[in-house]
Length: 432
Image (cartoon, rainbow, N blue to C red; front, side, top):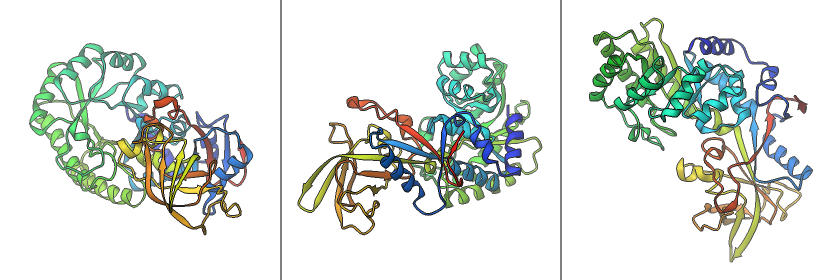
């Protein structure tokens, strides 16, 4: 499974990917890609220009900065050179993002038939996909077998029996529960991962079923976890490798360290713990392949959301605004991902000579989503300048677990938001 990805990722890490690589990526080629200047506020300037040029355009909309994706991949290759990324498609299945990551050498972590189909439609080889869902529908297992996706995870006896029946040649990674609680915003250990005392029985059951267990996977949790948890989880994975040898099983070769990565300084800290633990636990092992399942790391900061003010109410010094996206749309990340969103204004009617209203008086403001549910409240007591209907609020870092889990509640189709492509290091507009 990992051979092709290893080759692609090592090539990517050896040299900076060319602009042509991104512009010819599946999901990008044939679309307009707009140059962004390097100056501060370039994304805001681009959004402002879109609004002025197309006042009738649908809102809300997203901007995907492909330059950010390239920078993040370069950082990954520098900080975690021995870990091959398999992007977690569930985080954001945007076609242009998937295609760009594929062109940059990433593999893909898929959790369903639909996600596998989406990745394969971009021309990705099935051996660059791991079916990283420990509990799968039988029909989805049959589909994976039919298209050549041959690596999956498990953490129960029942899953072993399903795989034996429908995909007996599939290689398995045993999903274990990390020994340390990372304090992540989304604790996946509540749902997945074999307990330490369950591991011997599961390995023996897989062996009796004639299935090949080739490695170990784990996930410390998504978003803001304590990176020290990687060290204990990698050590636990090493113990499973040793147990498998004691049980007379073929030598394991894959360590899947899962996701939980966030870009920025947190990533630097996490990479340090991962590298240290891999060297300590597997430094003397030959033929070991280490993969990760980053989602938020690649998606979050690459997307910016633009929304329109569709309603306003003044109550004394307080201001209340309605926008055309909310908790039932891409803002669901506030509920399900515990994200603290921030925003800034654009095209303020109260001060048109300064479209970002930097010097305007601010008011404690409430921002509501568009649905009739009073629970649909995006921000409270948030300082904003005076806004008018048709002004815009721009939200950065809106790529992780946002549109991927939006709904059509109340008839607002906020699960289908248009995305414009930009590249933050180009010097001119490009039509691919």
